[in-house]
Length: 125
Length: 220
Image 1 (cartoon, each protein chain N blue to C red):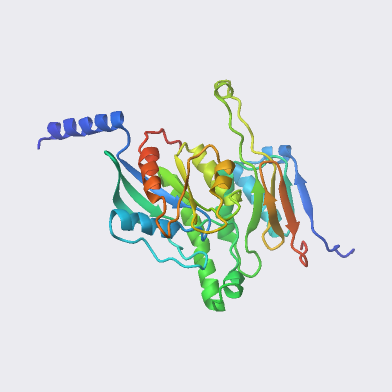
Image 2 (cartoon, rainbow over the protein chains, first blue to last red):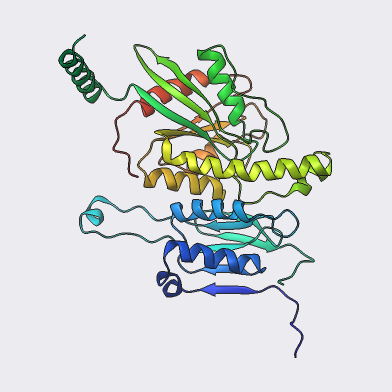
């Protein structure tokens, strides 16, 4: 058996992948992946309500010795104007990066850019 | 008083409330840890009731259970609003007990216990979001406001069509920049304050009565 290479695992998740899941399944999938040390980049992020649920679920699963929580940065849904609402047009949340807090740190975020860094000396399990 | 008279009176009060707006609102004081939520809650209570809400500390997650005070009447000229003020634990996405040990000198047992209670506090804060009518979102005016916690709280309240008032706190600090907060969240009113010194809190109270007294259709 080939030994697992040490390094940081980045996983880019397509919009279609998450669209096929319910909110509950989506949050479970994300948390399971992050708890194994993976950093996820979601093409289409979470809604604000899902983000709050993810924070709540994370708090329930914190283990002080192995999992201290998550680092998450993303953009919420863009606002729709009156006409878009009339025609039932909804805007989806935008890109989001989520990783284990012991591994991922946000350096800077603004309206258009998220800068993160990997905390040295750590690696995906 | 007879049943019909009571019914008429209650219908009349409902009508008055419908015409003139809200007279009672449950207001949550929200924000990340250590931005001055309890200092602000204490300031509001001291100014309007003479009480205090809770203890404050430089160690994050000092407030680990939501506390509230009912029927706090805040006045603004000829208008007023009766509020239930809820001081919530700071919302965070991570809690590391080692930070309490290494940065604040707590021992291991104290740190682990504080971290455990803090996780429960975050859950409680998020739960309270479903039960409030408006939020004073406290931000530290010396820090980058574009944090995920702030974005998540604002997004949640916008989705529920609840009013948000941003208190740009710690304006007494040299490096405070309330303009940064205003440009980060231009869609919501931002009031620069110092909860510690009381600077500009009259303006905050006036905005609270104005913003939280408006009738809105809350989405669940």
